[in-house]
Image (cartoon, rainbow, N blue to C red):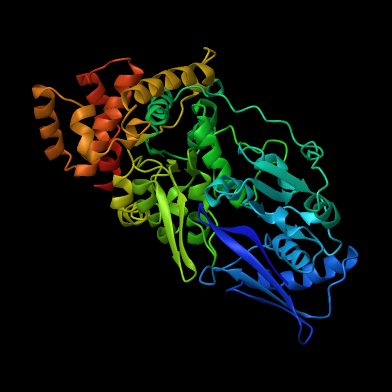
Length: 507
């Protein structure tokens, strides 16, 4: 007897439709699986055999062959257990094969027949309609994220016996979504109102978030760089529904979806340690999973102590910062993950941290150059805003004046981004940092005097074309915060000031 079950495998953000074919025929008793399988998929044979036996289903003493096709696609993950078990049961006549039509099946099986949670359910279910599916049969623990996709029947099962009863005609009864016991409450975000002084840095941070510009803070230890960066989540704008689903798909692939809240509502804020490997940042493995730059998609990637990261690790950022996605090429195929993040970085100006204050800095000139040289010019060129974070004076720390709370700053940022969305309605972009070079003249218009002024700045500061365009994009964001339809001289001057520091330290 022959049967066929439809399942899927995730490759990057895409899902490939897989056919699990089972044939039970006369011959030497054996259970064989073929179809370019990884080691965990090969192990499904023993898991399925034992689970079926423990659930009371007798496998005939015949030759059983399971083929996962197409054979040129590498099969990985534990989600093939359930489709293989269903295909074998259908071939043995234990389930109604007609019920398998237009049904996508994914899940892992324990030796006791329990159907266990798997990663990547959300993108698989989202793409099921494209495969012509009307129903998805998945683990009960994945029900919450699968229900995020409308227009499909979701059958969530807990064990093999329950699944067989549904496939043999028992009406499906939906269960309430599984709730994780003792789920922690959402923590209150740190507030900018807690930071005294550093008004210029807080202003630069506001400009950066309002246009999703890459942002670098340089200053001595203890000046508040990390404190400011950790308060950025409190001023990030809310995500649109499409962005929430896109971010949730990335986290689903990594198995980082919460059972209580499967749809991610807050923009990610990722803060990897400086010991992270290149694969940890970009995504790695023979079957690569998303790395930190993809987990920061539509949010913030914060790199503290920037020069302490390996140079080879930092250089990985250059291509994703431009293309807003990362492409990983492996022997098993090509994997693309989104990487539309805002880079926020903090660093000391030298090893001891006090350059150029020669009264406190003990570093030699060559030591300073070597330390700053860990940040390459091409990477620095991709940073829109670079600002000094000075040492705080006692008067700033002891000041009792009320600082602006994050909610007020966030209100201005949301208003500025609404202006950008209105401006770019038909352009396919959402913020000023994404303006393509060919549209700079359209969206960042300068009058004759401003053009002459920028020509002088271009020569004096020895800017690259990329740095010049980033100044104009930043000026456009400052104008949006000022509710101005035109870029004024004061907006240009402020944007230029945000490029001075990289010349101060890297000249």
